[in-house]
Image 1 (tube, one colour):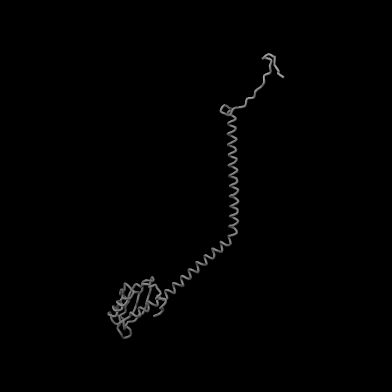
Image 2: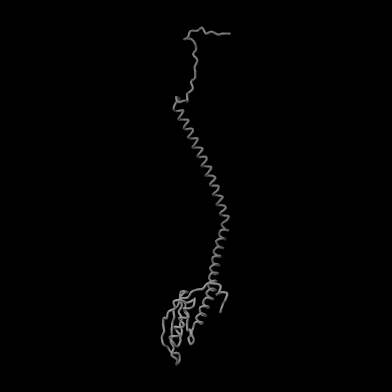
Length: 200
């Protein structure tokens, strides 16, 4: 069935048409601003949530590390004590090794001097200073014997820079003697020969 509206144009009902805002550039500015604010707030909220999660994870890790550190504290203290004890033992062993090495060294030095002494010469004292310098005191009957002793010491691998410090006349009972003091530099001969040979 066909309906025909015979009313005049002015009496006809006008239908309302709803116009939706256009977002292609001609829409209201407030809507765009609202959208921007919503996006910004969403981004801030997401970042805040992410940072809060990271902070929570870090706090949990810190608490776990502190708990583990508290558990290991006795073991760490024991390790420090053992380290100190080991250092003390090493120090004492070093002293013992040094004394043992010097024992052979000094015996060898005295033996070398005894072998180098010319006839009718006697050693009265031996002094060591600084570990490398020695002073040798003795008596003999002639300056030639003192020169022989100096030459003999210079030929040794252990003595060097042998110098005459004092040579003066003296008396032992009714005998005229010459008292002398020699200074020399000594060299430590490190090797198996001193420890393996022992006393010559």
